[in-house]
Image (cartoon, rainbow, N blue to C red; front, side, top):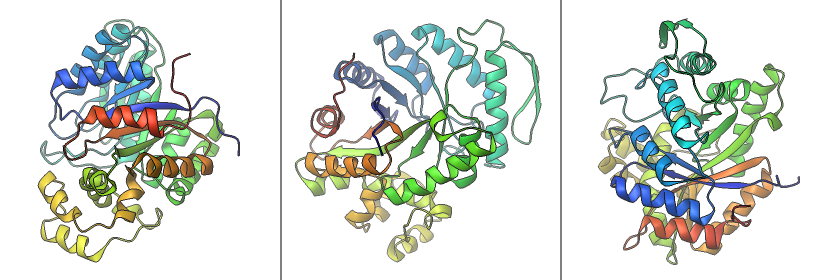
Length: 347
């Protein structure tokens, strides 16, 4: 198949670094040619919307959005106001990344129920509010009563990207979203499953796969030492193994017995120290199923294989990790200069 002509690169930043460092990374990303900057809404980390607002003031061209927020920890009506405000502040560069996952639910005593219905209600609510409508929703998770924005949104329809790995949420994304973020799936087998589900949802709504923008969201570390790069993303691969358990067979992955035993003993906790220790037993081949890690040649070959198999992918968003003794901005620079397959310069 023919490669889409407008492949773009994005930067997805965990809000674990100091705010000043995150802002510097956004500025550097724009200079290097990245066209998207996402800020993760995860755990009880720095507030993504505050960080995104500051980024809007420091950048001029990159699209900006949460990657991804959810309708459980943030009421969709407040997400709609935050996104409309960000769109105004950035001059029309805001994009909403929305999903049903997240690792802050336990800390907030939130039960993740009816994810498909919650996302459907959330998408319909934010779009109606941006359009200036008065909205009442009586869902299991999302509720609103005659809600209306008290200001006019700069755009009546901001782009909505749904982040997903589960089959029903992927189908919902195909049905309703402007774009789909396929999170931490770095293999053709995994993408075959994801695209099949997205296409099914799109067909249900009378749409085509070409009507959606597909984003490959990949943990990434580029280093001259293969093992050092693998170690950098290993804890995140372990986290993805835990959160992807219902669809591991679809992804062509078998849960290693030693890893499963270690996680079972810890009650499948997603605490960083737990997944780091348990993830130490994961083989390199399994770690690479969730991202790009290794030398520039290794990462470029893996990326080329994925994009050759799925030329419909229009954005590759890397979640950059620092190798031992290195820095995150090192990965950001080395990826765009030594791994990216097409020129990333602004036109």
